[in-house]
Length: 120
Image (cartoon, helix red, strand yellow):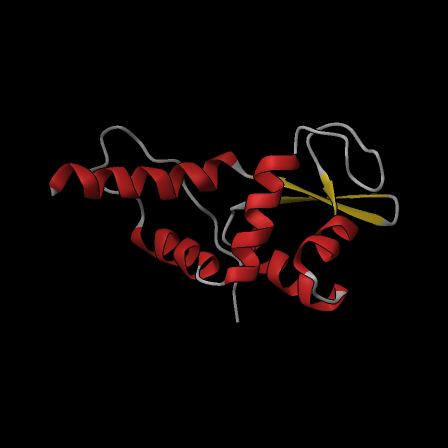
């Protein structure tokens, strides 16, 4: 199971990002359902075309059920994994959960891959 991990921003002086955090993010990305959720969040965070019509860069949890075709408990598990890897943010508004992309987590993965690319 996933545990909560705090990611640290990549500093310019650091040769590589924290490897444990990068590994955790790649673990979270190693599932097709989670990738589908991440792509949906990336493409739809800025739009208000979701079921709840909420603005502000967030997607309602109920939209993710429709996108993945999975049950609510399964979607919750996958989103929890993405949140624990700091790839997705979660915010409770009333009785609903809203999710968005966490730019710091994506920067960590992107930064790691670019460092690897520089060395090859």
